Image (cartoon, rainbow, N blue to C red; front, side):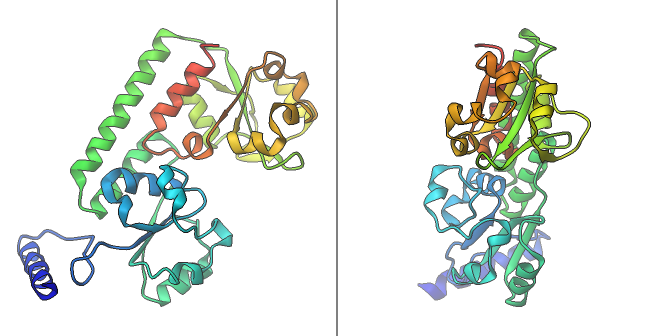
Length: 290
């Protein structure tokens, strides 16, 4: 039976070559599915959405959606990831965000002749749709990719219609990255926070700097944002709202005085995955429908 399946696969390959169609994903010997490791929550979510979640055998700590992925073995997070941990799982392929693995790990994996595909992490919905197309081409399911992108477009149209109906030009928000009370950062320009706020019709309160900088009481008070936004995990690391209140400068903000503190699951808010329009709409409603 194994020989028959292999012969059928080889015949299909010959037909494909004859018609000029290039196959990107190949079955392993005997026709069994690929064993895939993903590194990057957005890649994982898209691969799952394309219908290949059952071929993912391990992933990284940022891959929190869908929940099934959290039950898989974890290879760790960024510079914690080691080539030995990946190779011990005997994958056929690794799909990874650009810059996510160290150069040393990448070199070691390539020395073992392991297939590695790199993808740019999206920073806006257009790049999200481009990533969907790239992965759909790799898995040879372009129609499924276009369906996912059509759903993204529908979500963005719903968001646009809502914002036209519920216009509010003066709302401001600040995103606080918290990893405990001693490790606090504020998101500036050129961050996911600026992009997701813009999509939701909210102005970024933190201006004049890029990326993330340490949070100071003076900067927070001077911004006095209408809303404070955090990851669920960040708010939890502070001990909830009571812990947030203990951070210098927080009580002096308009956001805290008016009890306008929001938190979202980290990957959902920052991943720029297929649900980008959904989370932007949820954020837009959260600041308009108190």
